[in-house]
Image (tube, rainbow, N blue to C red; front, top):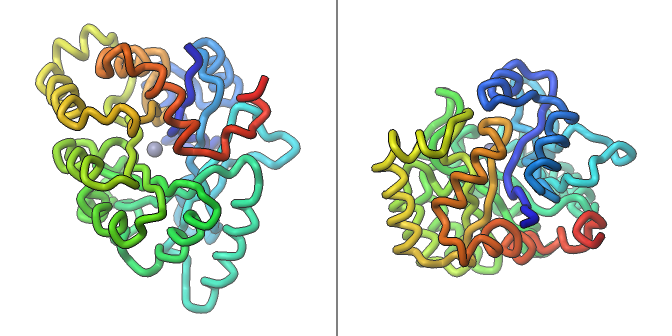
Length: 287
Ligand SMILES: [Zn+2]
C-alpha cells in the first residue's frame, strides 16, 4: 500500500532534530529520510514549515530547500511565525504568503499553537484563514502537548479550534496530533464541525516494538481505539508520523493496529488527497 505522510518535519543542523532522529533509530539527513520513505512505500510527505528559532524573523516558515533541489517526495505547509507580525509589516507578510501559496509544492498553512503564545482565534491569524479559504488549502494547527516546556498548553488545547471552525466555516482545519492527550475533546471538535479533520501524528515517539507498546500502554491504546470508534469518521483522519520523532516503520505498524483494516486505504492515502487537494497535481502522485 502506498502511503502519504501528512505531517513530518525536516530541519537540518539542529541538535534537537539530530537527537530525536537517533532516538527513533534514524538519522536527521535527507539521505536517511529518503531511504526510510522508500522502504515504507511513503510516496509523499507533507513537511511542516520549520518551527521558528529564536531571533529569526523569517515569515513564512518554510522547508530548507530551494526550488532546484526540492525533493520530489515533499510538499509543504507554510508556517505562520505570529511572533514577528506587527501592524507595520502585516501586509508584507501576507503578500509573502500569497506569493508562496501559489507554488505547486505549497499545499497548506501551519499554525504553531502552543509554541506561539496566541489563541488560534486571535485576530493575528484571521487573514491566514481567509487566505487558506481563497486558495482552497487546509490550515494545520498544532494541538496538544508541546515538545518543549516553553510552550503554553492553553493555546494548544484542541477545544480552541471549535471557535475558529465556526467563525471560518469555509476554511478547512486539520487538528495535528489529534489533540493528544486531550483525545476526548479532540473527538468532539472533529465530530461536531464539518470543516475539522485530524492527523494521527505524534501519538507515540522513539523506537519500540508495537507489541511492547500495546502491552505497556494498553490503557492509552484502548482509549485511542475507543474514541476513534466513537467518532467513526475514518474519512476525516490522515496518517502522519511527526518524523523524526518516531521510527517510520514502527509508527505505520502502530497506526495500522489502531485503525480498522477496511479504512487503511482512506487513512493512509486517499483522505490526504481529498483534504490537501493541491497534492493531486504533483508529478510524484501521477507517475
Ligand atoms: Zn509536528
